[in-house]
Amino acid sequence: MQDIIFHHYPVSPFSEKIRLILGYKNLSWKSVMIPSIMPKPDVVALTGGYRRTPILQIGADIYCDTALIADVLERIAPTPSLYPASISGVAKIVAQWADTTLFWTVIAYTFQPAAMAGILGNLTPEQMKAFGSDRAAMRANAPRMTLSEATGQLTEYLRRLDAMLANDTNQAWLLGSEASIADFSVYHSLWFIRRVPAVAGILDAHPKLLAWMDKVAAIGHGQFEKMRSGDAIQIASTSVACSADDLAFVDTHDIALGDRVAIMPSDYAMDAVVGELVICSGNALALRRTDERAGTVVVHFPRIGYQMKRAD
Ligand SMILES: N[C@@H](CCC(=O)N[C@@H](CS)C(=O)NCC(=O)O)C(=O)O
Image 1: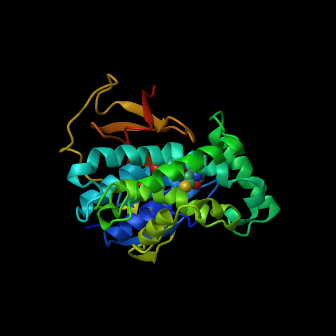
Image 2 (image 1 turned 30 degrees about the horizontal axis):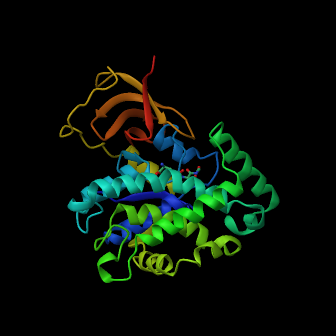
Image 3 (image 1 turned 60 degrees about the horizontal axis):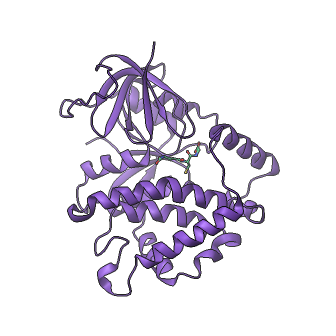
């Protein structure tokens, strides 16, 4: 089994989601630190343009988006499962809500003037400015929520989440007696709030939620060692991507395997990755591309939240 190489940075909520899943599955992994803003030459060497955080690398296979990364980790370590059979559908639906609606409500709430200094650690005013410009460019025309709307909506979401946790031990996790992907997806946004003292007080009205957060945090991050990004690129360049023969072809684009395609997120950071389509399954898309430094790699995306077009 090749190393699990995780590319991330400490204050990234989506990275925290995956660090905890690595811990939940008791996995050993390599940790590659990446920049939080562009340029990210070593990330782009692997992905071909996708710049969001985190990414997972296994040899010459590069997995984008935490929904897909969670599926890959589930395949590598099926127990304990992120998708217990009786709740797998609802767990994925709640996770998707948390990774989109809840996340952007939390971002609009947390990035309020009173909290700016505490959010990203000790940034200089120049670094704060660079961060602001980077995110403005990344979000382009994506809709923004005002602080008043975000505060009101988040308050209601927290009430709803708190109501999912009963006092008896049968409801230890959001969806019942078993943990699931829903816990990890909801947790990472609330973790982002809790880190920042100027805004964390909004959680205090919900002791059950705070106790559940302590339980998720106690899972930890598994065992990891640092790896340099140059070494990760070297590993990609000397590895062969795994074959996708077992994934059934599901054609909804009228594009055949082997055709040149461009794949990109459908909401923000819409940088296209171009290559030859090698996986087009019910749940995932992947293309093969060759990079000067990383060699031939296969870049994988989930279907949900991404768009694919023919690249001519
Ligand atoms: N749907 C994506 C969202 C990832 C995402 O938005 N990550 C944030 C950081 S937590 C990001 O990419 N920010 C810009 C950056 O890191 O360059 C996923 O699940 O991985």
